[in-house]
Length: 171
Image (spheres, rainbow, N blue to C red):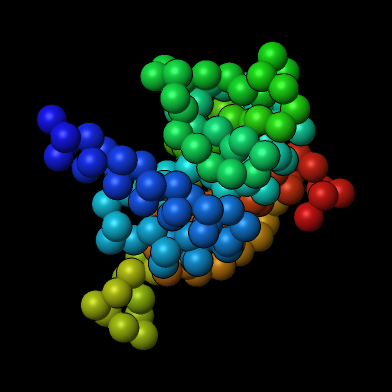
């Protein structure tokens, strides 16, 4: 029993250390720091995105939160809406990318597609990008998303662009 508890405590400490290192990192830095460590932190928005989403009215229960800017997994055991104000102003929901994409479609009729294609300069690698359309399939605006080194980096940048579309004054 003692060895099991020690392993759990080490895992919690490792997750906390990884989360502290990624708080204000760029999507590329987050992916580089977390990749290969067995954590699923890459699936969550960063603190800056979480704040912007709350300002846009994002109110979907999440499995993680930012408490005074520090990432934490939800200790309540079930998804919780930290953005409803009942937990105080220093705590906000940290949703997963998939939750955010669903919310943008449901609440704002913005559909996003992440895609990958073979890198013509190096056929053994992939390039990732994204497209944003209105729910009816018409392009929201013509723009080139850019090429990204991973799907997670593309997803994070897509969320930044969706936030910018709804709140163009905050870039």
